[in-house]
Amino acid sequence: MKEAVDRALMLISEHRCAYMVTPNPEIVMAAWDDPEVAEAIKCADLVIPDGTGVMQAARILKTPLKEHLPGIDAATEILKRLAEVGGSAFLFGARPGVAERAAERMKLRFPGLNVCGTNDGYGSDDAAVVSKINAARPDFVMVCLGVPKQEKWMAKHAGKLDAGLMAGLGGTLDVFSGQARRAPIVWQKLNLEWLYRCFEEPKRFRKIKKLPQFVLKAWRKRLGIK
Image (cartoon, rainbow, N blue to C red; front, side, top):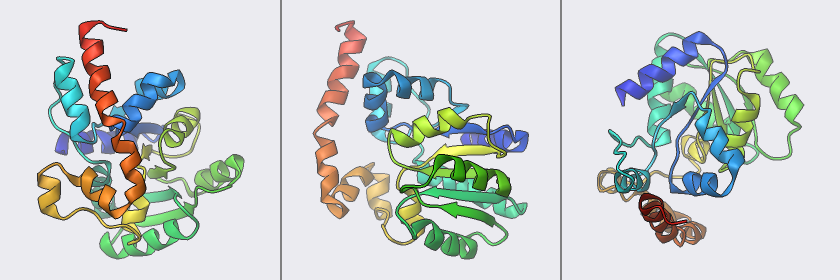
């Protein structure tokens, strides 16, 4: 974790609007099917594997990764480090009101952090969001628009915003706002957080159906089968 967070903070210090992605099986499958998503991942300044599914696929493809780091854990560590130096964060995404509630709770959780702006992810004019971010000049932009919208959004705006680092973080603001709960630690240690989230949000079970396809595609790629 330390290596990934240190890299993120270095990118923040450069303040060139870099971006990081945290691919899970859903994102990887979207990249296999959509060249624009694949390019967004390829061009990212920092890629942190989120989830054991990606780790397993990497082993199948004989390109093992050191470790996986859930996006929310990466964000938490980045925010802690920013709070220590009075850094700033902009929260972009989720349903109306969620980012504002997350901001209130984050200020209590990370004393010293400057939450310099929020914007929901529904119906906002893109130019207005860009203007808002540029006015705030944040160190860290949490882009929580869901897959693959957030990856495409970051790729489109990379290097064009007055910000340090953007990160695609899915439902992270829902958790920070208290609207959603993380899995208990024991589930996390067993790498079953994805299953817990399915029980919390049954609609996620639809995504599980894609997991066998994900594993099969990994094997087909290893064997050179189209």
